Length: 82
Image (cartoon, rainbow, N blue to C red; front, side, top):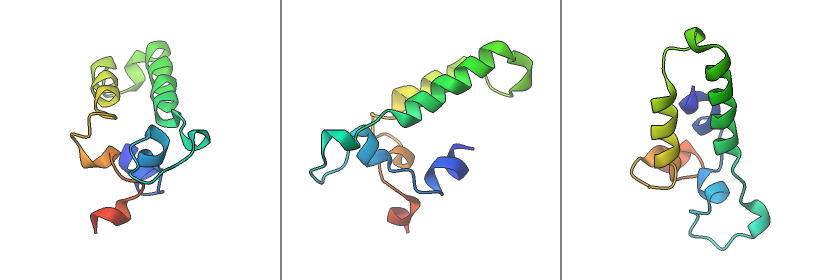
C-alpha cells in the first residue's frame, strides 16, 4: 500500500522530510507521511482484527523514514530508481 499510494504516485519524501539536497523552503517541509501513519495507527487501535499487521510495523516504518536505510523513503519518486 505504501509503494502504491505514496511512491508510485510520486510523494516527495525527500522534500517533505527535509532530505532533499536542493535548497528548499521551510514551507515545503511537512510530515504528511507521518500523519498518514498516525491515521493508520488510530484505525488499527479501533479495529485491530481488520488489519494483517500490528503497531510494531508502524513503529518500524516511522523509525526508518529519516534513517535513510531504505531507498523507498529517500527520493521524491520512483523515477530516481530507474
